[in-house]
Image (cartoon, rainbow over all chains, first blue to last red; front, side, top):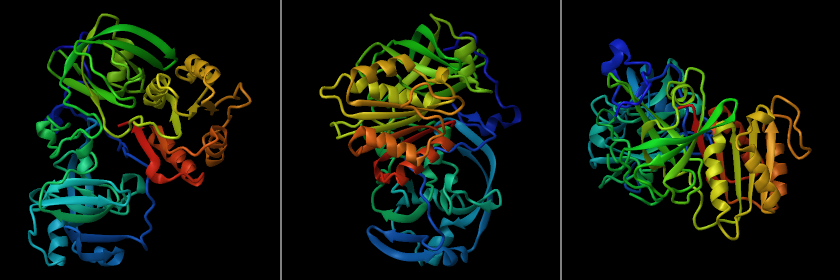
Length: 201
Length: 248
């Protein structure tokens, strides 16, 4: 349905092939969070990989920073409809974390947990092959608290709520367990190119 | 997947029934739904505008009207500098125009059911919108949940729904209203003439006479950070604080 009188800013020229349906380009970096912004000191920071309830390996900040680092440039897409192009991140790929923990593919599903008790689910296949990392830097700088620092999950090919801020654990689950927003009306998978915003999209 | 009442929401067309200028930068749009829905106070809709060349723009707007099932919902839209959709609403939309929306959406920033002991609402500017739906909804409940609203605005004329808020305050002993006016002196002695801080949150809590078991904060990210920090310093439990940050 055409809206009378609406012309909009038009498509984004050369970049239109990079903007999923229903999204618009932003230059700034909006912040959206369901609760207070947690304050995690590096001295207290820990990252855990679990299989079900059982911790397999725990890293402190310096141990985690000793893992191999990878730099990526990715477009990101928030379900609230903004997209930001060419964002630069540095962190540890999920396969490098699993290798250090001596794990291969314990189960097919992962639930990421955060310091603010947030959680989000991602199939393991979407975390491997260089698709995802635990990011430690944004645009060459430590990630600010507002954007999920000290460390956040980065799964840029899915809507950005999957890229859990203040991440503290990856938990392997036998089933695809819905996380925080997935339990509250948002899509279980969240592919921006298929516009999977809400549960039944 | 509906622990909080979110249901499948498909696109529908609605007609702009009435437009009201609320403050210099905020207008209310009363929309007649073609497929009416019942919503929970705090929920939003996604609005979609489509240009003749097929380009479409989508934004989320909180519902300001109370949760009563009605074919007409109210959105209050702030005109943003550079806004694409808000500029359409403010400069182009007229009564009788049709737009598309889907909703109700959102399963987190919701008025608590069953009722809790007390609620603290903190908002700035158009961040009042989902809180207003809550205030309007609580008025339909008996007894109404003791509730305090701490609302920040630049000047008195920027206070959205000002008349209605003052009227609720006068008529409802269980409702506390405190304004934080940041760019001029406040008119009432019970209001504050500064930006929000923890001392202000503490004073509003004292006027509420009981500890809120649910806190809702809505505004820009900077405002929400300052307000939640104030609430935490005032001794409130982080797990009871729900936030909604706009600008995204």
